[in-house]
Image (cartoon, rainbow, N blue to C red; front, side):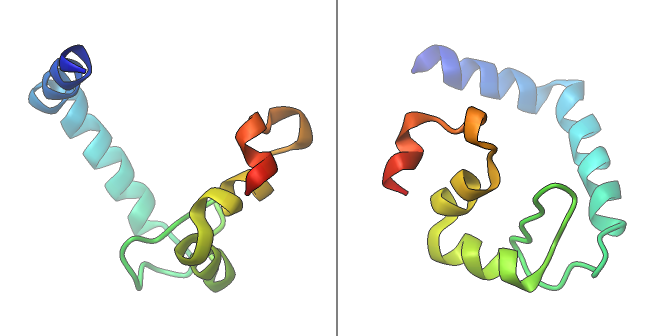
Length: 79
């Protein structure tokens, strides 16, 4: 919607975008193993080759499989 786009533009042009960029840059520098592929998917502060493969094959299923039983939305039943 137009309001969503306006909110995104406000964030991009405000100080929060720079703060988030710096914060995520710091996290990227601390990855272990280090960044070797973009995008690198990190789940629960874990970054493995298995996560990368699952993310590339079926990101939605990976997220559903990662969520606890009580936290899964109904859409996960089709994942």
